[in-house]
Amino acid sequence: MDPIGKAILDFAKFKKPQDIYVDSPFCDTDIIPVEVLFRTYEEMPEIEKKALQLCKGNILDVGAGAGVHSSFLKNKGFFVDSIDTSEGAVDYMKSVGLNAKKIDFFDLQNEKYDTILMLMNGLGISGTLSHLEFTLNHAKNLLNENGQIICDSSDVHYLYEEEDGSYWENLNNNYYGDFQFTMTYKKEKSSPFSWLYVDFSNLFKTAKKLNLNCNLIIENDNHYLAVIEKK
Image (cartoon, rainbow, N blue to C red):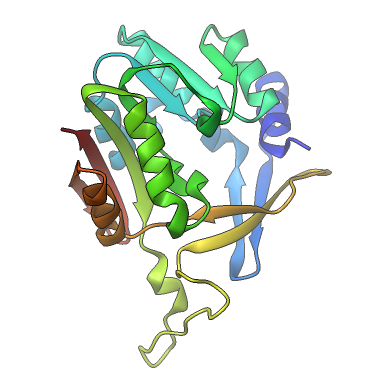
């Protein structure tokens, strides 16, 4: 099943607003309007705009979706490889002239980039905090000297806050940002998948283990943008 891909192809063809539903045992259902995946630069939040402004050199767009970030960068003259595990998303990106490939980020080998772009909580593909180091190390191996990873994520500790100000901790998880989700669009439903939301402190510490510089660029409530640089 490919709910994201189906949603992208449907919207591209019919231009009819629909919703993607993201469910987790640990929080309320999140609703993603499909048209958000087709947003223009002007419609993007400030964090995404800043991330695109910081891109340099040859770029890898991880989890590129409908390719809105890739298209913007391509139109600015950058070389961009756009990857996604969604067949429908990749088919759409190819149809609009992007250099798109259906491949898992962790299977990508023998390539080098100056910027690895991981927006819309792209580090979530780590699945768990314990796997974040592996993700960053793999990205590091795909970077040229002085290359960078541009990523955003959220500190979701607030989800566990009680009315009295105390915090309820999910004892089934090793880390409060480790989630399990399913995604549904119409009759298309994904298998459950692991997804990570990482607070900046843990991101910084993990990057430091790998001798990577990690800089906080923007912090907006619980959401932030970071640039991780290869020394």
